[in-house]
Image (cartoon, rainbow, N blue to C red; front, side, top):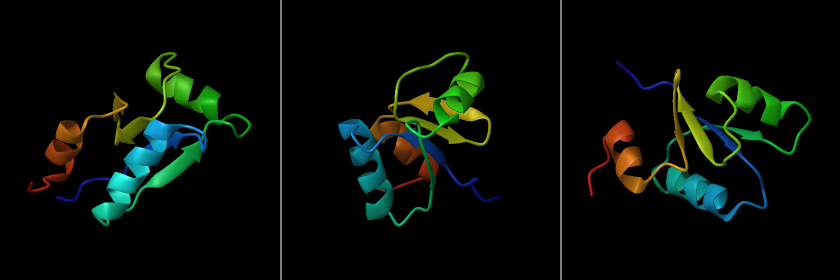
Length: 81
């Protein structure tokens, strides 16, 4: 069973968002990026998370994590250290 493509709600000015995207790139893991500064995107994220305002927020399927740790990422993507 394959893991659904992650969706990352982020902004170009967010340092934590940049770090998360660099981690995905370093592991060659594809993801969908949604810029919360674009019209309607933050509202979409808020609806999916019951009002969360913090970025980055990462979705895999219906589950989400706010500013996920490297441990969470490793668990979700079965990354060997």
